[in-house]
Image (cartoon, rainbow, N blue to C red; front, side):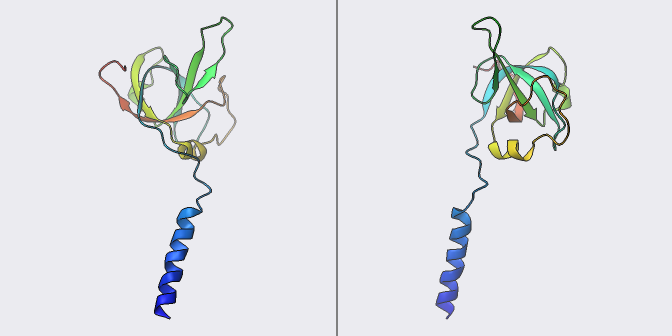
Length: 132
């Protein structure tokens, strides 16, 4: 009897671990890309701001330009500190992409941003050195 309860407990734990349908994918490694602050983003659960990334990355939303080769990459950054919320200031943004954080932080109200929806990334810091 004790043995069968033990097996049932282990089976239940394994079932819970193997049945994570909410897992939206892997978290990326920390990226470092020069960025320029643009504006507040849509109302979300956590404060989120729109930045233009100065180098291409799959973790940003690519905006087509009228002239070929002039694509613009934007991302909504979760938890960007107040010290970086300055228009037209370039900073070396360190961030990672977390699909679960993006799912958890969807807009909670009407979105007035000109660029929506934009991929969301999570702020990790600012590099003192220029990003490679």
